[in-house]
Image 1 (cartoon, helix red, strand yellow):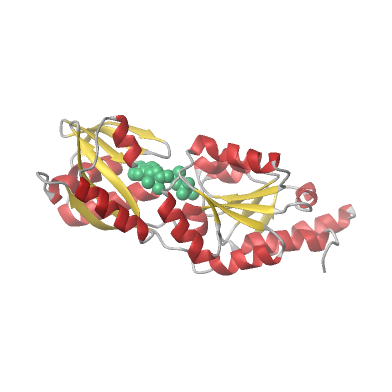
Image 2: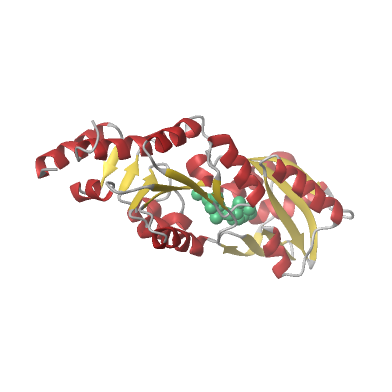
Length: 293
Ligand code: ADP
Ligand code: MG
């Protein structure tokens, strides 16, 4: 394509809410054959709500919500905000947090009311030798089978309960995936969340290749592995944890509703935060390059 055509293309993109970092970005979309989609905040709204709180024997629901809610209140993760908001609604004001540490992609840990509290993936609790009792393991599997995200809560050396949060698939995601497939791309769902949840979301939007339980620092490696298989990869993401993968991809697309770190790492920003714009972006660039009409 001529420089003028590329400029016209980027101008058209801006009108559609597709901000392209430079005209050369359009060229890099030419050979893209695979599109990796982050789950939380990209395919789903990322706006989670607390649905259930299930204490272990010997723990009260109020205690569970107070301690987990207080710790999560210090975290910006969508799961954490859902827990903090839900807990505040039910138990009122939350105790102060004495210390706090976020373990990216796994959860949070810290001290609340003199208790050493851990909230997050079951594997984070296992690092502290805290294991869910059988009835909670079953309740967790049940909720995850229904596509919900479950976080485990423990303190003072014992697992104390689970919290169930749910996110929703964006209304346009399934249509957007169909359009990406229509453009000849293979979609791949990538997430740090549990496999059962990821597969449930994949099924809802028409993605059969699902890569789940990936730690934030390993997302870029997943992209690199696909590239090593000879694929030319576009990555769409929103979170801080997606930034290295967006940079590794041949084409990085960030949700405009996402974090600044993701937007900086990407080649294209989708202002509307809608996956349909990813299909528009690929289509626009192919048109600009004259490969389709
Ligand atoms: P995604 O890759 O889908 O955007 P993340 O990598 O951000 O998701 O998080 C992966 C999983 O780690 C979450 O689904 C959740 O189970 C757990 N997790 C991460 N941060 C927190 C937190 N602050 N509180 C509870 N759980 C968390
Ligand atoms: Mg995300």
